[in-house]
Length: 254
Ligand SMILES: NC(=O)c1ccc[n+]([C@@H]2O[C@H](COP(=O)([O-])OP(=O)(O)OC[C@H]3O[C@@H](n4cnc5c(N)ncnc54)[C@H](O)[C@@H]3O)[C@@H](O)[C@H]2O)c1
Image 1 (cartoon, rainbow, N blue to C red):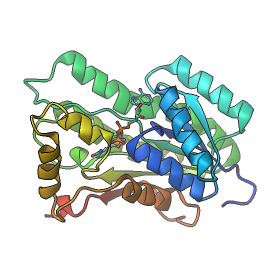
Image 2 (cartoon, protein in one colour; image 1 turned 60 degrees about the vertical axis):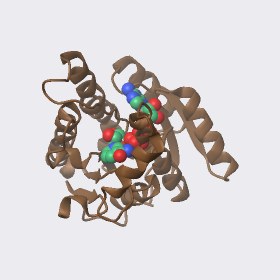
Image 3 (tube, rainbow, N blue to C red; image 1 turned 90 degrees about the vertical axis):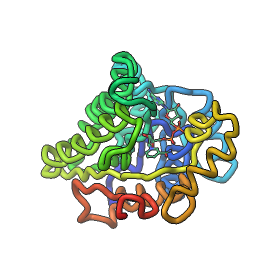
Image 4 (cartoon, rainbow, N blue to C red; image 1 turned 30 degrees about the vertical axis):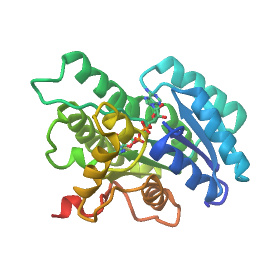
């Protein structure tokens, strides 16, 4: 940890999947973790799990698309824990469709959560980091933002923007002592994968097929992504700035 700096971390979408594993990893690293999720009940359940495991956490309701909700969450966090030094912009939503089959409403909804979200939440917590001349932010991208993937028009556009926004945050704030990086996961087995295969006649077979398509014959686990996020956030890692760390089981290297 950094002497004299707060150990408070905010993880958006921390109640489920990758965000849950990130929250757990940051608690293990000794941070006070805020599980900030639009689903407060799920965030509270996650924090209860962490407490049973001997960790600490705070659940707050936060909708990354809603400025009033972000302000309320920020006030609550400041009151309970003080300034925030670590931020993980993880909350995100997926969508299947080509440019012809995605409606304008759906395209806007995906951009709203996946792009406006990290913008609004970063803007809320950057002043804490700037005031203390230290901070670390990780944005959760996706390989859909770096290579062409079929049927992911809105999602790919949104994740490409997340990666560009990561570099822009780095350009604007590295001199203020803030390290901004992105993790770029491949396919990871989370409740999301269960949701997108739920309507398949045989969901288990559909999940197995997704796993077979991976170069190493399996999807990633949320824990594997969480480990990479901690690597990027860790004060020990003081030379990663504006980087995009691909963690995809080798998928995009082929
Ligand atoms: N699962 C994958 O294969 C995969 C691959 C690459 C990147 N990602 C990215 O990882 C991140 C997490 O995905 P996941 O698979 O863990 O999904 P998930 O659906 O399991 O979890 C997403 C969490 O975000 C929360 N959330 C959704 N909208 C929100 C909003 N408006 N405000 C606050 N919280 C909100 C949900 O309540 C949920 O707890 C996303 O950004 C996703 O794009 C996932």
